[in-house]
Image 1 (cartoon, rainbow, N blue to C red):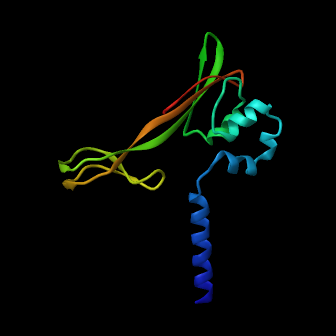
Image 2 (image 1 turned 90 degrees about the vertical axis):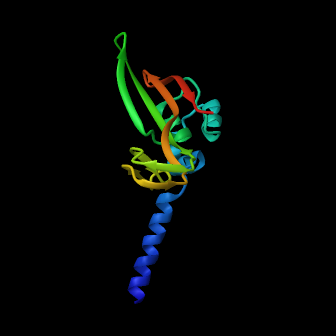
Image 3 (image 1 turned 30 degrees about the vertical axis):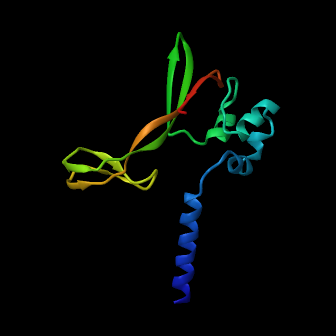
Amino acid sequence: MKRLSSCLLASVAFWLSACAASTPGSRVAQAPQLFEPLSTAHRQAVMEGRVVEGMSPDAVYLALGRPDRVLRGSDKGIPFEVWRYTTLQPIYRSSWSVGHGPVYRGRHGGGYYDPGWLGWDMGPDYVPVTAAVVRFSRNRVTGWERLR
C-alpha cells in the first residue's frame, strides 16, 4: 500500500510539472546560456515576452516558447524559416446540433476532436487560431505578427 501511494504521488507530481505554464522567466531559468549572450534590448524584450526584428531564434524561443509549426522556404534564392504559434479560441453556443462536423473540444493539449453528435450543445468548443508568426532570414528575425 505504501508503494502504491508513493507511485501515485510521483505520477501526480510528474503530470503537474508537465502541465506547468512555460513563461519567459522559466525558460530563461532553464537555459541561461541562451540568455547571457543577448543584447540588453533583446534581454528586455525576452523578459516581456516580445519579439523584435534582429532577434536570434534562441531569443525568440526564450520569449515565446517552442513553436507549434516550423515552415521552411526560399525567397529569391534566400532561405527563410517561419515559426507559427497557435492558441485555442473558445466558441460558445447554445443550440441543438446534429453531426456538426469535427470540432476540437477541451483545452490546449488535453482535448479531442469530436466527429459530430446529436444533442444539446452548450459549448464551449475550442478551435485553433494563429497567435503569432515569426519570420527568420539568415538566422535573424526579419518580421513578425502577433494576435492582440
